[in-house]
Length: 235
Image (cartoon, rainbow, N blue to C red; front, side, top):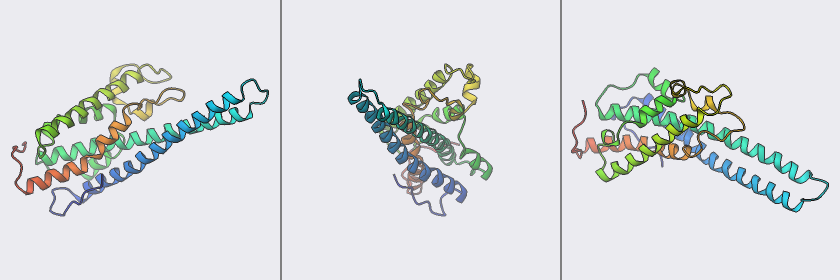
């Protein structure tokens, strides 16, 4: 999904637009790289398994040993890209939600300091709060059926983030066990080698969700200027 064109008449500061664009294009590249990393990891695993089969019972295991090391490198790269993608996807959700919410509510623009802070990886609690806003309160320019589908995606993603907390609490190795500390932390802080990635099952859904905010902001502004909104704007 391409980044929309915001005119100077739009009630967004140039810094808000720059931040939205920066996170959007960054996440686009990271999503593509993550897909490549997944393919690389899967291919390395299959090569390793095949090598084990045809060298079984042989004295020399150079080939499967090398491919095992290659598979470890590929999985490490996949995890690294995944964590990086989570960092920017979660920031894009929080920033996009914040700007859309304030535009729909007719509130003043975010300060440069607030925008800059929201370009960093949020805590899991900050992400939870962004995902807890019902779609009916944000997507005022959309048809009810569209909002309902969006709300289903939002709730599923919220449950995935709650699942991250449950899994992180079982890691040990310096990761807090109490819920308050876990919610106050960032997912990338809890990543530990040798464990399944905490973002597993949630990252791709989060990235897709984050991708839509610039266009939803643009669509709301277009419908608002055209007088097509039938919903009252929140105070």
